Image 1 (spheres, helix red, strand yellow):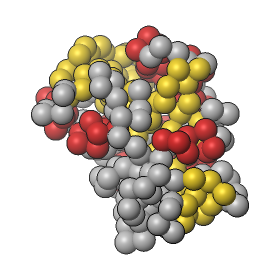
Image 2: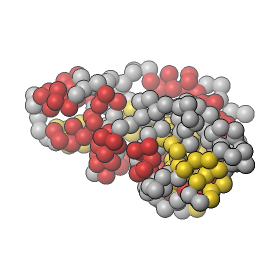
Image 3: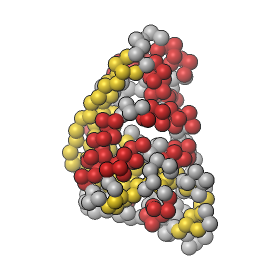
Length: 279
């Protein structure tokens, strides 16, 4: 619930501590933020714009696809790694949490911890707010200063989302780990060219390391490989939940799918990278 994570939050306008009262979060300077009836708080400053935030359609697609368990090998291993890194208590910050699916599985493995789901999409935050009884959700922009206290997080989780190295470094406690999950070049291989999907950069890991350099150092990496047998309808849902949804209209996607087998074996290929915070 949101009340569990309020002690870790700060005002996005002035940086002061936040408190909860009468259905709002407020700071001593008088800045106040409504808590939506779905349980999340919108902590975007007034001049912020949601930009490329996930749409309601993308969020519904993601919720449906993840609920089917296709990414279970990824989330299970991620949850194991986070649980092993924590002492059983503390705060796990999921930066770019989406529906809260990954965070909820992490919290299942760490019964003494609470989770803070941060996402720029209010549609995602609505679901993340209800993803786990020990999780709270806020709407915030990962590219701006996060509305989170210094050294508040015992671990940061970042799954298929933007990475703000400076802010992740600030909100992590000393020695706190960052776990990032990224797709590898083989992800969805037989679908990429026929469907016109966005391809994965061959140097993605190298570029991720470079983007985090100066704040974090690599601390272990492992490939996560799986395979799913997907129907055309499931592939449509899969495409609809990611960035390719902005580039391939659904009608065009269905036309291209007609040329492929139904169902189709699809490789799911990721890299789980751990990073250690530099002083």
